[in-house]
Figure 1 (cartoon, one colour):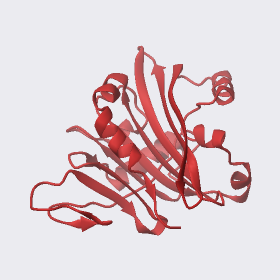
Figure 2: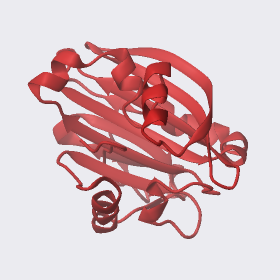
Figure 3: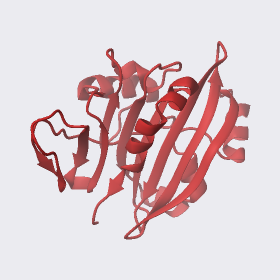
Figure 4: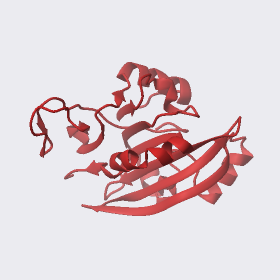
Length: 220
């Protein structure tokens, strides 16, 4: 797992198709791309017009940003006409960028995993984590929490959905929306993170909520 950011997913549906029990009738352009990984029983959806970041570009960006791409399943999509892997951790994205990862936990991390750990999995959200990060020179300021929701989707899967804002140099404010889940025995973490400017998040809320609420862990 990377220290600053984490990851997830893959798979596409187009034309007239049926995937994961969802039928796309007729030959009209589909509404969504269904992003799935059968080996981790995980899927979510993004609007069909959003573009997949190439696996090689995403891997390269993760190595640059976090010092290593790590193992597990990772995928990213971005809206707009110029999607790029560099938007993974950049501020002031005018279009939503969504990143997903499924990662295995070692025994120590598994034993120490808590709801607060899940809240802080991508960026510091809890007061203790923010205080610690600030003392180490964390560059983001102006934290504002919008949502703090505990999730129990079933079959022992549990976790949180957190929505919050951070401000960066130049007084640019981004909104982050994350779902962090773990399985019943806390050996796997499933992460979905979306971010863009606060203005983008506000104007695209319906599409964004469709994406975030679609994150599903199938039978384990």
